[in-house]
Image (tube, rainbow, N blue to C red; front, side):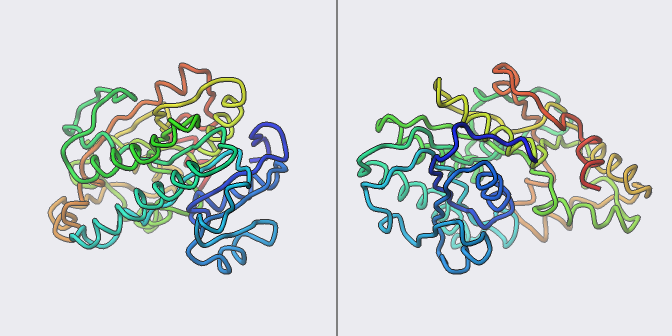
Length: 312
């Protein structure tokens, strides 16, 4: 990832969620590109140990004086979606870690003497809810949300970010598909494949929208550059052009690992274990990066076979 350029050097970027899978690589890329990095973290000392002494870490937005100029905010904060069952308490935590943090950042922007040029706020393709299995209809940035938890969570998260727009800030809401890289969900997904026990999950017909970590970071850098001369506000689907079924994804991984992919995992135990969040794994979404492609972004890893080959 040596060609990541975020525009002119010497800009100041404020990153939330910087110690996570995506944030760690983003901070590294920004520093390599000659940018200054501020990090919002609940544990600044731990964040500095993780990210390095070049990074300035704060515990609260109140620790950043209104006189300090931030050029770009990248808002990645959020507790992990896939994990403990979505109890009422867990849903409150998921909402607070996204909407609450975003509101704190926007509140600081309102008080800042010089406003950031751009806010890139992470969202997710969960915004679109779920599609019927086997449906190949593409969801674009204009497709509506659904009245289910994960969809409404993303909608509220984006609304909180867009509150910065009246301050003159360009707000780009980037809806991530499953991010493939050396970390995140992929290693766990590949484990049964590597053990020769991979196969369709549920029906295997659900569509799996994904993006290679390298392309996700390249797209963020591309938005940062574009925002210096134009307006990049609005929704952006951060997904690859190819959207395989879950069975096709496992078959591609099995080819790279030289393993079979014939052992299915029934849907019932997955739903029993995960409850409502099982929809994230068992129901699909064919989310197309319509705006990225229309505006001229070029993917380095457009197919899942290419992406997995680069990572396996």
